[in-house]
Image 1 (tube, protein in one colour):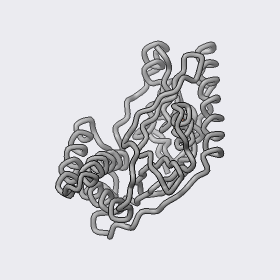
Image 2: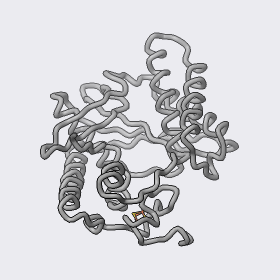
Image 3: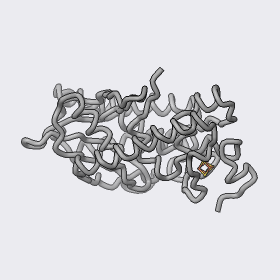
Length: 273
Ligand code: SF4
């Protein structure tokens, strides 16, 4: 079976390649190489982000038909948070329970819809794949492909307490869409901040990226992911992947390799500062 590289994994790879490998190749590393990796739960940020995406998708479809969508946003956000909670969510100081998560997803979705009344979609939430050779496949789930004047855009919604740089992810999307024979002139991120329940929801922030630069970035990481995994399959050594114990995500909450044979940089007893 082909090895899947998801566009959403690309931006994380340079932070800690070993953690990324543990997440991306969890089944292969556990089942074929016997590493004792530990499944991680969904972060509160990811759960709210997923709920916001699902709500937006439903709302944009209804709005395009001229139908009301406020109730649907709430219903979809609630269902999504409940579904994530079933698998387990790591709550944090900004989203400390389900009701906070639902409220944040709902108001983030509204903030985006209020600022972008014209979201002119060609296709919502499209799944794309491309053959990378050597039995690797690139895969990505794109929020919206749209138009801005004559420009063909890829638009991605992001939420979080901090705005991060996701250029490689968008470069991967651009590669996928162009491989499918379609044009890409502009990559656009629409970021909305996740803030505590009692704070006012800030307006979204738009960030545009050049597709050529983003594709180069994505392709460099894809080549590295492929060659690292191929080297590991020959040696069986985790040292193919550099660890980064200074990463903000170096924690048992976020890393399946933390304190295991796959990465002993920190033990379960290590206290993060
Ligand atoms: S424990 Fe830390 S250094 Fe090791 S793989 Fe995980 S995040 Fe990277």
